[in-house]
Length: 324
Image (cartoon, rainbow, N blue to C red):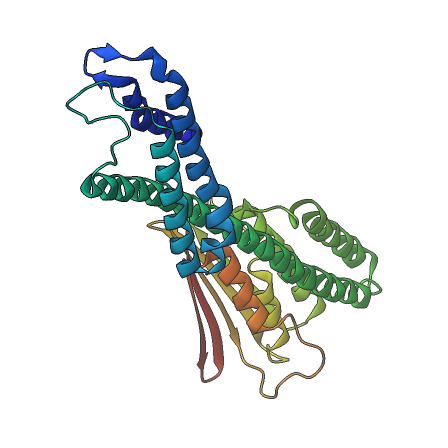
């Protein structure tokens, strides 16, 4: 459509050569008009496909403007040399040199027409660059998210299997319960962990299975999960497990607990994770780290989330809000 529009404008510019008077079409000027039409197209496409990409888009602005001026001037002189004399006495005698004012006017008009096409071409080039940059950003984001997800999955799976190994030898009923919960957790990891989004209810059930195994492993541990307004809400998988794992890890040995709250209201998801702090810091390998957690949230939600970590005496609390 762009090329058709350009040809229509060039046609309107050049077709006036076929008229000497408003009601007289001079067929003998057809060859001259075709040469005129061809010359204007040479100038138009020479600018579009030679001068703009080789000079203007490479930062050689002054060279571009002077080259364009030379191209336009050369086109006008060529057209003037091949243009047949007018049969209308009012126009002038054959071979008469056009007035300076008329030549300058034609030069400026043609130059502005070419510059208008250049502006359209630059706009198109800018839009293509924007699409290319957005494509690179999206590709980079997908790779980075995949890398962060790959950090979460093996780490969590290792902890889960290690806990199951510790608990499985105690008695048959406990082993059966552990294997059932472990099956549910692994099913979630394999079937839903790689999806773009899952139901919030499924993620909450996943956290409930994980904390139930943790409660079975530890004598004095309890947990609670409160949820309201969560029906039909979709979230990325494994979004909350890093915070829950961290809460479990840094609980004290006795009278420990994890309290989770999920509340959806006014198009926002509010999540809280609370746990008592251990008296002495735990040693050993950690999780994926707060920096990576924040980076994953940045990639997933941009500016549509907030994350606040509160250290209030003996209580550690995570407060996260996501705009759905």
